[in-house]
Image (tube, rainbow, N blue to C red):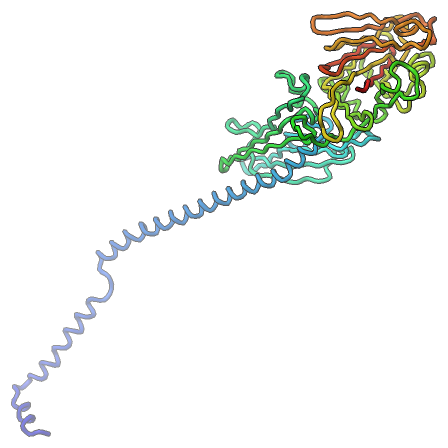
Length: 480
């Protein structure tokens, strides 16, 4: 070791080196005193953290809320797409339409609130429609909140029990909602609609089924309350006369039997409606107060006749049933006038109750369309005839908005206009025309003719037949 350096160290004052070593201890203590947080730092931290967490929570809640709203929007949009995919097809194929919540027939009657009902494809043998579709609002209760689901009920082959049930939309408002209630579709008339169907006070589709040819558009507007999302669906029946290009008219449920090869006025040009296809259910609809049954009748090979048939009586249990001709061995119709017609071309009072019983048949909503195009047919005449024997104490009358022409229905050599059957007396009211058949003594039987009247179909809105005791009546068309 360097001697000079050693001497220098030894020359330091005693204890100076020890003093240097002791000076390290205070420095270490100072370092330990600075570990952890001060009270001020803790207070500041406790103040800031809730603010940051609260802000983050609000942001997360907002994100979830937006996600829920977006989800509801997607659901509502999907609802609209699902409804549109079935709604337009159903309306386009309909033969008859109603918004009556208590219509008959009704698919799934008693299930929710019916908003729209559609009939299509009549069965020519039974008269029942092969397809009846109901759009129904079904209540769904969750706690104290009730919303509605729109369901499509499908019935077939005359059954009122749904063969399929399909939920189309959810979260619909209540029918009694004060802001945006769930309401039936809005219907507008076609350009060639019957005035009796589409008058300002009539609107028969709110009371019963009406022919689709009289319907222009069916507008279904829905506002879903959760998001206030609104959508509107518009559809038109293919059979609507609003289409210049035409459509496909509904299949007829009955036939108008030709008088070709028979004898009588206009034989070969006139046909009588065969009511064989009318079922007890159909007649029950016709006999329900305030309702009528929509008839669809094939005329020849190209046309379809539509009208609505209502039946009322002053006697409980009195109605009418389809009957073959002749209804009576002494009646002119079916014997000397148009003998040999097939089917059941008359409606007969039933059961027999007595002379005090009266029956009224009301025909309305007339129209004839081409079966292939759905276009309105013009130049036709409607015909009605006494199908029984109107004897003393009995009357049969026809009243219409159109003038009634008395047909010469007598067999050769018999006096005009109705052989020895009841004489016809015309009369006119302020807005109506009437022809009355007054009963004659039974000594005149068998009758050689039948009382018959004819009306132009151009503006025909209504035809009312009144009869008493035990009568029958037939209906038909004089072809263009």
